[in-house]
Amino acid sequence: MLLPAKNEVARHLRRYRTWERVMLASPADRAARDSFEDSGYTLCVLMGKRCAREAVAAAERYLQTSLPAYLQEQGDRPQQEPGGKSRKDRARKDRAGKGTGKTRTGESRSARGGPPPGRRSTAGL
Image (cartoon, rainbow, N blue to C red; front, side, top):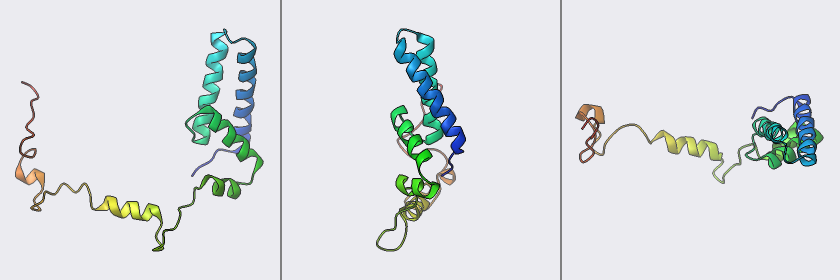
């Protein structure tokens, strides 16, 4: 997982807090609200979160802790299953057998010439 430099996170967190105060002081000001939402979106992208509250909380934790502690807290390291393989390895193995384009008889769709029976295209009619 790539993380931004702490000084960038601190700068964007300050910007978010500043626009939050401005927006709360004058909630009818559309420009202030837009800037506040933009700064929240930037924090979401930086911290890899889906909402601004989560991004702000993650940014504050990131700035207060060391990098290894933050990564461990976020669960970035793959967890081991009882068989000794990680969940990522298992998912990779499961995907490897799918999507090869083979039919049940082993012949590829392109060798058969066209889509499977019953799925004829109606494009251009």
